[in-house]
Structures are given as C-alpha cells and as structure tokens.
Length: 253
Ligand code: URA
Ligand code: URA
Image (tube, rainbow, N blue to C red):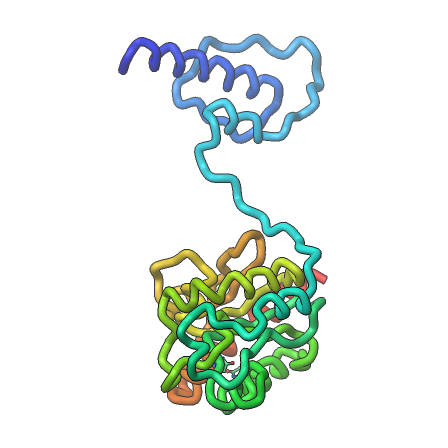
C-alpha cells in the first residue's frame, strides 16, 4: 500500500470512529483505532448513516427513482402518431396503445400485439388477453381498474418476438406512460417484456415470483398468458406470483 493510501485509511478510520462515538450506526472499521473518550455531551442526537458512505465517495450508484411526469397519455399517443420509426409499422393495421386506469396501482406489460389486438387496436383482447383478464379478476380486481400495455405497439409479422432494436425504439413511450401513472407494481408478462423493463440477463423461469425493481417500482415477472395457454400446468406458479402482488397491494394501502 502506498503511503498516501495508508494515510487515507488511517484518516478514514479516525473519522469513522468519530461518527461512531456520535452515535452513528452501521459502521464497522475493521481495526480498532485509539480508544475514543466517552462523548462529553450526552445524549447526542443520531445522525443518519448517509454521510458515512460519502466519506468514500459514492460506492454504490444511488438508486434511481422515477420522477413523476406531468405529460398526458394523449400527448404521448399524439407524438407516436402514425408511427414509422421501426419496421413493424409495415404490416400493422393499428398502433395498440396502453389502456386502462391512468391512476392504476397495478400495471401489466406484455410483449407486442397479436392479430386480435392489431385488428381491434386494444392490448390483450385475444385468447391470451382473455386469460389475462381472468388472472386480474382472480386477484380481486377488474380489468378496467388496472393498466395494460406492451413494450411494442405494432404487431410483429407471424407474431415473432420484436427485435432488440424494435423494442428499443418503442419502449420509451411505455416508460413515459409509466412515469405518468407511477403504478406501485408492474407485472411483466414473459421473457421479452421482463428483459425490456429490467436490466437482467436472467430468464423468466429464474426470476418469476420474486419482486424486482424498476426505479423504485416493484416489478413482478411471471409467465406470459400465451405460454400458459400452451402449458396450463404453469398456471399454478403464475397464481402464486399474482398472490404476492395482491398481498403487496393489500398491505400498502
Ligand atoms: N400478447 C402480448 O404480449 N400482448 C398483447 O397485447 C397480446 C398478446
Ligand atoms: N388464478 C389461477 O388459478 N391461475 C392463474 O394463472 C391465475 C390466477
């Protein structure tokens, strides 16, 4: 260790000990510094532990909190307009916007519209959507009470998954809607939606059922209802995941 570094460590330890004496908690200097005299003035008001971290500079990035936006959905949708920003516009009939309660505590995010959604200009109205409606009702909510959207707003040909680029082009509008509504919980449906909202390399099988974070909003990954239609045995796990969401919402009223 260089001399400067040693000096810095010694100095830092002294400061930590000083803070500890003041009653600041959560400090562990590994080596004891000279025994500190008892504080002259007791009791000392406790200081929050934050300054300790700042002694070292910020070691962990500060958690990013989502700032509430004052935009309206109408403004966002007007800006999207008759969008041609990505190749998915070529075969779509309608742009499918997020719908539902703009004061929702709970939001569901899927991948992209399918044929029924493209025809009706509404998210999750086909077979998978009908199952999603049942899932919402199973936790005691009505479909109109929640917010429902997709990462991509145009139907991909043959229902393929949107490419990373297509998702990256469309996702900012979803994120702006999320900033407007600030739901307390977002359920991401399936791998594509999950990977687009969360910065993760894990798959849905691994992360489903455990709350994740998007800028201070709880995110629950679970299986996509289209997957549940193909493998109904996975409904049980989805139900477990949704019960956690229901319990969280119930206990944070
Ligand atoms: N699948 C999705 O991901 N979104 C829809 O809107 C419909 C089906
Ligand atoms: N309730 C169930 O029984 N299954 C689900 O997938 C969701 C809710």
